[in-house]
Length: 493
Image (cartoon, rainbow, N blue to C red; front, side):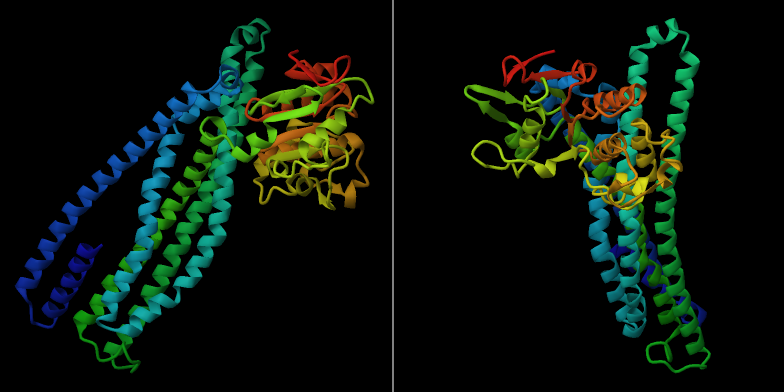
């Protein structure tokens, strides 16, 4: 940055004096020397950044290898292998870009404009002030656009993981698909999912380009304003302090240094997309392999059910609490979720932020179906809402016409129990948290119940899904806790 500023300033001084008939060839020699120095430093810096990103990516891969080496086989089997294999080809590089490239861009965002402004102050502090005035406006746009980029990137990483897992499943079951002559149908499904993923990617890129366009607009506007005031000052049409009575080289110096003031903003805008991708990749790696939430594991660790009976819940997988009516399935589920106090009147309050609760008594705000699903999850990508709603059959419900724009009354007055449960399930699916569901298939017809089972089984590959249910087909998809004949004893289905 310093060598670029030196080169720009020396060139401005040489050109200005040359036009005035006072060419200084030593200035030109100094400018060329600073250009060579700038190129050499830039080359070394680029190589250092590339080496640092490679070291970080290799370090992430090594941590994943160590984590997998110490992971229980049942936990590895619960991982979505397609997502893991495809993700390990992308996630380490994305995390490295966050740790190195984005961090350098952040440092330069703090230092670069300050250095450029100091250089301009040496000639005209009024011109430097004119540049600085527009900086808060750009920061506001950074915040507004950055939030949209971050949420979009997170949604795309999850969509990529689902796509990779689905592709791996199709490869694994290819003989069955071929035997049932279903290859064309599966090809159409994968093509539709690829189109959805591509559409989401283009949405994120459009926002990123908008962010860069905003920076270009403000930088061009600022430089144009400076050029107008400096030109009018040289024509003696205005007498604004700091813009009038300047020598030609001074005006050229200001106009050539001004782009350097905005260059770090442009670089940061380019790296903001890398930041969003890196954060999403880091979160995906944590979910897949690396991190075990301490508070969640402590809360879910071992629970005493009375007497000597106890249970331990896994990090991922489907666990079904079964038993006859009145055996305490829903009560146990609510106690584990921290909604009702366990024995001794103690709540498991430390676990509630880590789970998504689903039952017929969930809160349903007035508005649209999409807003009801997104409630409590912050800004949600429309693609995520569509995928979640479609996976539980809400988009095909004739009693909720209009898709995500279907109207929902306050408290869900116009909804059936089955619709409320499926809204809760869709909300839980996009939350990324562990799912605790009370009788998720009890009020559904066979077709919708089958869709809900598939959605829960798919979610259980990446996180814990705990259900209280009478549905034997759902219970057979995972481990059961039978509260029937021998209450509190765990057995594997």
